[in-house]
Amino acid sequence: MSTVVSDANLGTYEVRTMGCQMNVHDSERFAGLLESAGYIPVVEGELADVIVFNTCAVRENADKKLYGSLGALAPIKAKNKRLQIAVGGCLAQKDRGEIIRKAPYVDVVFGTHNINALPVLLERARIEQEAQVEIVEALEVFPSTLPARRDAAHSGWVSVSVGCNNTCTFCIVPALRGREKDRRPADILNEIQVLVDQGVLEITLLGQNVNAYGVEFGDRYAFSDLLKATGKIEGLERVRFTSPHPRDFTDHVIEAMATTPNVMPQLHMPLQSGSDRILQIMRRSYRQDKYLGIIDRVRAAIPDAAITTDIIVGFPGETEEDFQQTLEVVKQARFAGAFTFQYSKRPGTPAAEMPDQIDPEVVQERFERLVELANQIAWDENKKLIGKEVEVLISTVEGKKNESAGRVSGRARDNRLVNVTKVDTSGNEIDIRPGDIVTAELTYAAPYHLNADNLISVRKTRAGDNFEAGSRPSTPGVMLGMPKLSV
Image (cartoon, rainbow, N blue to C red; front, side):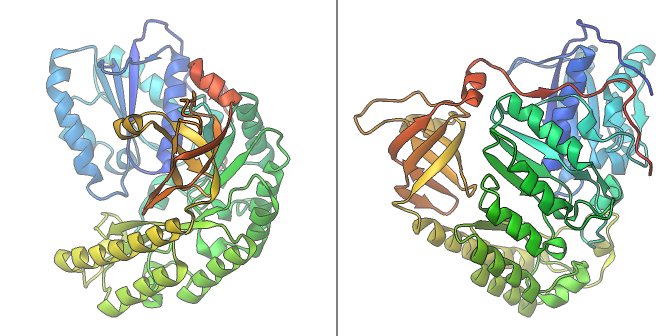
């Protein structure tokens, strides 16, 4: 493997992230790699010497978004020969050399399996004065073994696995991320401990199919055991995970959630469709009854759990009857939030070639009905919380709307977004920083946020101290001799 020689004069960098939480996690690794090589973050508002796009191939119009952004940089690149542009992530893995054909001023294209090569490819492009395209077909190193620069002082993503063994007909992720590869529990727990030692209060366990964790080494209890093990880490106050698959969601996981105090009462459980017929065509390997049974068992064990979901509208062949089944599941599940998507063809997926593609006007009309129902249910559920006390981990003090109202924002234990007043009962404004934890009474509900204008207490934290000092948690990784995976 090539090595990177640090040069303190390499310049500034910026990473622009598109897509899912896995991309957010990878972008932290991009930043860590670049800083280890000698780059520094660009000052906000200035043009970086290196701009890296971390792309998505799942979201609708992802390619248009990328090429639009690249097009905007073309005249700048023509005038500024020092500027380097790199494109990584899922769209890079899929389109490969096509990116250079469409945007010949791009310097580097690299894939999802070799993000560790980024600094070397930038250096090679600079020396050879020509574009570098390097896409490999299998994972070289776990991203989690690479250095990282974390965005938040109070929270962090921790990957438990990469890749996915499912074959959902609408999803291209397995083709771009590969089959599931699991990290060993000790490696995961060690990474969490490092973050907690640096002041992190909350971690999110991350995987393409997070609750299938352990499949590679044949342990069906691995994920539930991992959740329980996080409860033994002193100073780790909140644990979340995303995204699970209903097929692999077991009662052992529910029991671990219910009995491990720092595992939060929150679950994101993708539904995709409420129709058994459509679920079968999607190859989702569960049906409506199984899905609702999971929801019922979670609520029986964790009565205050907030459950969110993903839903696709207008999948090929979806009839009005199929759509009504989806609406019925939404009514029964009473989600705290729903991420709703209009189906769009993703080249390379089986669904893109299916007959009975739905007319866009029909998809739009169904989408609007679903959003209206989901919003109303979320609003009704939020209204039930008015008057209750909540513990909120503050994540931001920014935003004109919050500033003008004298509020800060954060997440309750159930992951609901809460805007909290900074003024105590005596009328004094309290200094509240990202990373601090407040207790407040909820006073107002909207579909997807709550306000808490009765401040009860503020707990200063080490994470808040770190934010104030401009410090971010980081992991050094292993730049040389990183272990390769057997594939």
